[in-house]
Image (cartoon, one colour):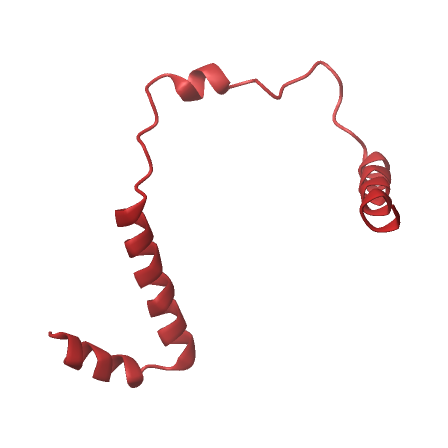
Length: 77
């Protein structure tokens, strides 16, 4: 299929399908332009547990308080 045929077929797609096509094209171009470097072996094992602490996880109330504090810092200062 050449460019003109592809373009004609694209116009026959629904809007949501055209948007999905555009997204797929942008992703493919992005991956060619900026490919992700391979993850060196052993990185996952070394990073495992980096965020682990001996403290218990915060409660829902503590999380709500943290969110409220951050929002106040962001919008009221």
